[in-house]
Every structure is written in C-alpha cells, then in structure tokens.
Amino acid sequence: MTGKIKELILMNVQGEDHPGVTATLTAVLAEHNVDILDMGQATIHNDLGLGILFGLYGDSVSSPILKDLLFKAYELGLNIKFTPIPLERYAEWVEQQGKQRSIITLMARRLKGEHIAAVTKIIAEQGLNIDLITRLSGRRPLGNDGEKMMAVVEFSVRGEPVDSTKLKQDFIEVSKTTGVDIAFQADNIFRKNRRLVCFDMDSTLIQTEVIDELARRAGVYDEVSAITESAMRGEIDFKQSFQRRVAMLKGLDESVMKEIAENLPLTEGAERLFRTLKKYGYKTAILSGGFNYFGNYLKSKLGIDYVFANELEIVDGKLTGRHLGDIMDGAKKAEMLKLLAFKEEIHLEQVIAVGDGSNDLPMIQLAGLGIAFHAKPKVKATAQHAISESGLDTILYLIGFRDREIGE
Image (tube, rainbow, N blue to C red):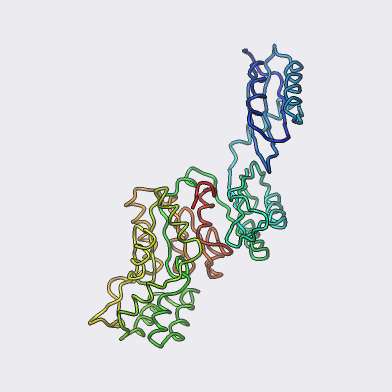
C-alpha cells in the first residue's frame, strides 16, 4: 500500500506466555499489510505483556484487522486491548527520541519495594521518563537465603536531569539508608564497549593493606596503620607517608613476603569478575600504591595482564627500608592508565578504574567508568559511581552483563 498513514492503533496483549503468541498475532498484521511503528515485549513470572503500535494507510479499514486479532487472542486465551493514537501525539513521541538516555542500575542482596520506590521517586523528581526496566540477575529460588546472590535491575531512562548534582546526592543518601547500590551512567556507545579495567590492589582486590601486614610482622603495626589510614583519607601527602612507612620495615626478612602473599584474602567476587573479564577478552591491570611482589602474585592467580606498583629494596634477604624507582602515587596511577589505554589503542571512555582511597581518585576521575569500591567517604562523594554493599563482581552489571552471560 502507498500513501500516508491515516490511523494509528496501539495493541496491548496480556496473558500466559507460550511459544507462538507473537508469531500468530503478527501473522494477522502481515495479512493486512500494516506498518509496525513500535513494539515491545516482556515476560514476568510467565505472564506476557506485548505491545505493538501499527499504522493503517488511507485505503485500509481497521475493523476487519481488529476483528481478526480479537479472534486469535481468544483462541490463545489472551486479553487484548486496542487504543487509537492521535497522529500529532505520535509526532511528539518521535521528536523526543533524540533526548539524552541514561542507565540507572540498582544492586542489592535483596531488592525491596522501598528501594524501587525511593529510586523511582528521584527519577520522577528529576523529570526523567522510564522507558524500560530489565532484570540482570538470575531468579532467586524460594527458601534460599542467598547471602552471596545479588538482585539487580536496570532502568533505561530518557531526558536530562533537572539537577545532576542533587540526583547523585539523593542516590547516595538512598544507598546509605537502605543498603542498595545505585549507579547512574550515560547510555552511549562506550558503555558496553569497555575494554580495560584498572584496579587498586589493597582494600580493593584484597581485603587488607599489605603494608599493614608487613608492619605487623615487623612489630610496628600501630604506627604504620595510623599513617596508612591518614594517607587514604587524603590528610597527608601519599609520597611522604609511603617513605615513612617503608622505612619502618627495615630488617624484615624477605620470607615474610612470601607467607603474606600466599594468604592474601581476595575480595568477594574477585575470582568471578576476573574469570568473566578474561572470557570476554577484557584487559586488566593493577595500578597500586602497594608493592609489585604481591601484585605479581595476584597476576598469576587471577590472570591479570599488567601490574604497576612499588618496588621494595631487598639486600641479603632483608628489607632495607627503602624503595626502588618512582613512587606509585595518585598522579602516577593516572599516568599509567593513560599509557595503558594508548598501548591498547582504546579511548579513555573505554576504561574502568576501581579503587577505595584518595590516591585512586585521579584514575577514577580519568576513566570512562570510575568506581569507588567500599571507599572512604571523601572518595565516595567525589567518584562517579560507588559500590558499598556488594562484591567486586557487581562491576559486571554496570557494564551490562546478565547472570546468564556470566555463568560459573
């Protein structure tokens, strides 16, 4: 048929899902040679929701089409509803398609009504429209406490926030009070095309600060730990604090490093994360203010591609209290991230950076996706995104992975 579309009809179908529903109904539309202008389908607990917007040309009559569709829906045991759509309303909808799109990801051990209610209220207050809601996590079995399981849903929203700063602050407050992690990111070509993931090591990949463990063996734990905490909070210069702490390790036997390395406590989700990243061809790197002895141990254990960290000087099997080469501080981490992106021939928007301390902020802010992981308050408030309630593998959901794609 030719000519202009004279009538638009939105068909909504609901009922028990089974194979062939969409094929049967669209076969009717095919017989009448209508244009399909929009469609969407979702299934929740085997209950189907199907919507199709179709247009009729000037010489078409809608009543025979609607009659045939009603008959087929009855045969299939489905409820069907037709809504006429004014042409001017369709034109307005087409104009809105150029609006900015964003992805909001909710991640929790158990997703509750209060999480959804709080987040959708903020979305509405910011003048954003929800176009699509998708579940990324697998279905939770009944009777399974599932402490290590995650419930993750993704909102695709349209429009520009009224106040981006307030949006972030509101999400942080909801996260703090309800225990749900929330990420807000632009839905652009880079989001599902990240290629390099750079990690801090201490208190990010592993659940300890290695220098504190070394200090414990050297009998200076309290002094070193206090300096470490102050440096991570950004209260004192990292380079100065590093030199002071390393000096206190003078005389420690090299064998202690091997013992500590073999007992490093990996952060929850680390092995699942690296297994998946490796499977899908991502490059990974450790950019750490810690020590490369331990970074190289993790490189072997997790299959990491690059390690850049600090080198302890060892003479006659003993630590001298000095280091070799440049200190890997925040500026150096950002520099190495840039160099790795250049080496891998990728855009900085394709890089993910993950860390917890103030010396991680330069690389977190430089990367396309910067994540404060179980971070200090200053870092969490400054970073683009924060994960505070769940494991490292939650990063996979921010890239857009579903549980069925991750596997085990």
